[in-house]
Image (cartoon, rainbow, N blue to C red):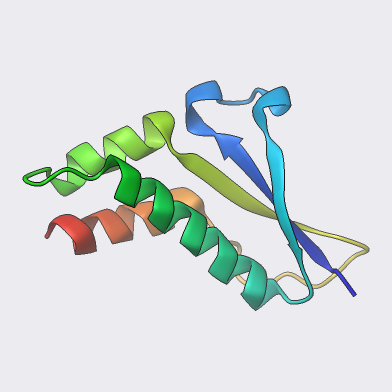
Length: 97
């Protein structure tokens, strides 16, 4: 049974719903969070360049990266709200030091 779907917004097209797409459906909230993290990690990897600072990578991500969010279906319970931007900020520090 699918209880959650991931919708991906494009930071470059902020608030433009016609630029969003469904990236998958998951039975558990934890699986949906893991998939969102993978989408953000892939986005950061595509933007990262050697010598880039964490702030530069984060700025690029928030301007052009994928911004996944989780939609609970049929009143499925939601764990701690996943924030792609918060996750990306922490990952930028880990990637760039």
